[in-house]
Amino acid sequence: ELKVEQNPLFLSMQEGKNYTIYCNYSTTSDRLYWYRQDPGKSLESLFVLLSNGAVKQEGRLMASLDTKARLSTLHITAAVHDLSATYFCAGEETSGSRLTFGEGTQLTVNP
Amino acid sequence: EADIYQTPRYLVIGTGKKITLECSQTMGHDKMYWYQQDPGMELHLIHYSYGVNSTEKGDLSSESTVSRIRTEHFPLTLESARPSHTSQYLCASVWGSLWYFGAGTRLSVL
Image (cartoon, rainbow over all chains, first blue to last red; front, side):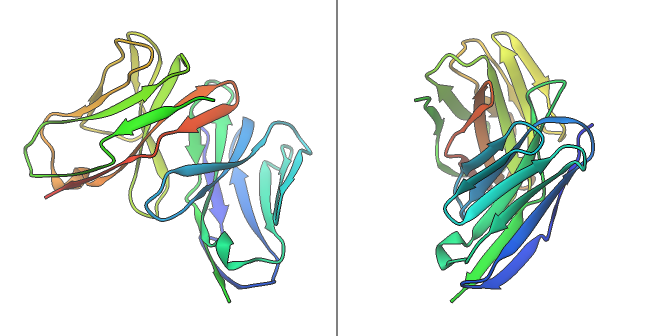
């Protein structure tokens, strides 16, 4: 059974700073997803990582996947207030298509 | 572009009522899912379906039931709502590596 763990769970940072959110998973996972969620809203897809070594970037966010270490990271560069949200990683088991989510990282970017 | 619709968006009801949360998608996806999420918490899979007449329970025990009579429609029913059912319910469908989530239904049971 796939288990997904994120850390940190809460992150408060200043604008302009860099930080990384970590996502560890327990067993082989076909794909790794990153989502953003604003309070009371649904999930917004950020990245889909399909293979070892995959790196994707969009604006100030960059995601990577290391399947050997069973680790994905979401790196935030020069944070701005608009990035404040909760970020989830999710793994997709090889046996089926269900997504297993991490606990989420609640990010607050302070001016 | 795939569209997935959930209704209602918000629902406040009294204990003991029967309710059905609707989920529909327009792209003919076979695989559909229901997730439950308490505010600010992780999402838990409660039901899924791989096609018409196929339904399975997910990882989190739920007192809800689902049906899949048509490909595009995957409703979730609570026979007798309780305050412990207060949560957000998200419906999703998937095609390959493309997941589509609905806007969610925020349910409050008083």
